[in-house]
Length: 155
Figure 1: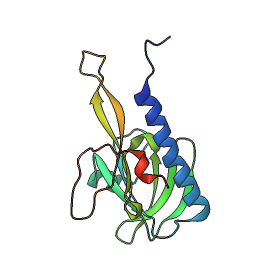
Figure 2: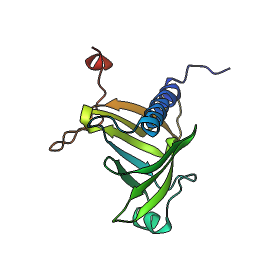
Figure 3: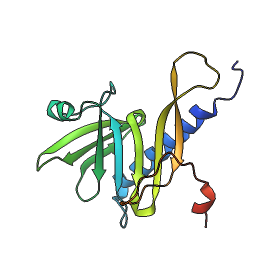
C-alpha cells in the first residue's frame, strides 16, 4: 500500500479524461460555435504516429490546430486519430493522450498544461508529470504556469 495519495497522477488522469471526452464529442457532433483547439504534443512519444517528413520537421514537439478543416477524427481510450492539412497535404496522425503537453481552446480561454516537475518525496533527479490548469494566453500576451480557480468557470 502506498504511503500517500498520488494526487498528481489522479489529476493527470482526470485531465486526460476531459480531453478524451471533448474529442469524443467533436468526433460525434463536430466543433460547436467558435470552439477550436491548439494541442501541443511530444513527437518523440513511442505511440505517436505521423509521417516521417513531419517528424523530421518537428523532432521534439508540434502544435496542432484543430479548427476549420480536419477529417477522420476517431477517439479511443489511449488517444485519437485525425487527418490534418499541412501545406495542402492531408496527413493522418495518431495522438496518444499522454503525449499532449498543452490543450487550449482560445474561444473560451480554457487551457490545460502538463509539465514535468521533480517529485517532492524523491531525492533523485527523476521527474513525474504534474498537471496544471491555466487560463489560455491572449494573442498579445504570454502567461506562465498560472493555476486558476475553477470557481470563475461556474455559473
